[in-house]
Image 1 (cartoon, rainbow, N blue to C red):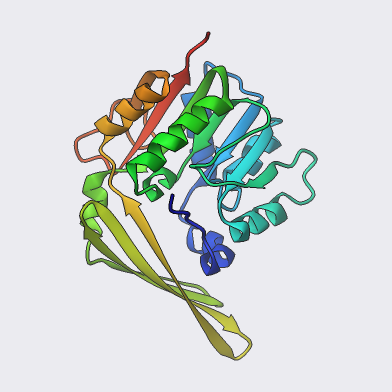
Image 2: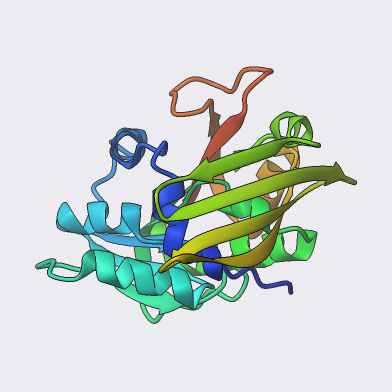
Length: 246
């Protein structure tokens, strides 16, 4: 199983993702599961913990799991001083093991796309199923194949006063590979570091089939932060699935 771990990017991740409206995403997730009132939540591939701290601030007992120690360090700093901070653990999606089941698992911002092997998706879905209480909910999103294909050959730049990042996308055989050059100011000098990430374009029908094989029921799909089915040109799809009540 291939592990993904954010390294140098972790320290500047929040600075370069300020376009992500976490309040709106949190509100959408809450509305999506409005019929449930989960008290225990797993934020799988939690990154720097932006959603985990929001669920915790609302009174939930939150576990945040991520494969990157660097990202978890940022998340722990973000949660410092909270009356009810999340509990952060270093675990990959594929090797998920929790001591106690939870009522809700979320996995957002195309984290599932980072699983590039079919067996890794199957292992992740099976692990989430085990981690949920009977009747528990699993919510995740994926970037669509059409969006990832459109990023082939694209170059993007992000910068602020102390950091600069350029990444280049290359799409081949269903996988978007993007190489990143990250420059951070060190006094009067700049430090250059590099990372390479991969995202697989999973077909939504295949993902739904894998959820069913893992035991999930009542599998639903939604357009990007909407409550109706995905459109043909959708860039991001949300899935909602339930663990059956025995």
